[in-house]
Every structure is written in structure tokens, then in C-alpha cells.
Length: 121
Image (cartoon, rainbow, N blue to C red):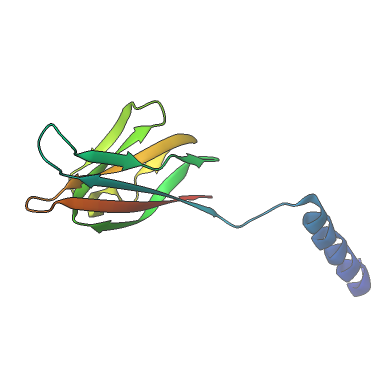
């Protein structure tokens, strides 16, 4: 094949990839959760934003404020995994599905939050 033919073939393949919408970029999905201590049995609050993974993914980033770890639960409320520290979760893999993250309050804190980023290739 000639140099011109190879160039035309490469251009055609690139055009085909662009037209079919094939994406080679990873998808980042984030979930956020909060917890406030309140008064025992009265006004403690737990909130976890539901997020959905389109495919299997790996936890790539965790940011916490006043949290000493967190847990992941399915959208149905079923516990998936509890992490005693934020760093422990990095690299953990999750299958496609819907999840929430809920932080564990550090001793002495009245509230906390956690944001977890999952990268799906």
C-alpha cells in the first residue's frame, strides 16, 4: 500500500471512530454523604447522595471532612463495605450499579462529610 493510501485509510478510520461515538475516555462518577451527630435518639442525620456506575469502576479519590472512614451501601440499603480509614478505600473495585457513601463521624466531631470518586474505564 502506498503512503497516500495509508494516510487515506488512517483518515477514514479516524472519521469512523468519531462518527460512531466511540469514547476512549474514562468516566468519573462521584458520590457525597454527610452525617451529623445531633442529640442521641433525637436529631442525628445521615444523608447519602445516590450515584450510579455505568460499568465496573475503581475508587480513585476520597475527600473527607471530619470523617474517620465511611461505608458504601447499594441503592437498596444493603451494606457493601465499611472502610475504617479514607485511605483504605483507594483502589477498591465496585461493579456497575447504584450506591451511596456515608461517612463515619470522628470522635469529638459533630458532623462530617465524604466525597468518593469512582473511575469507570
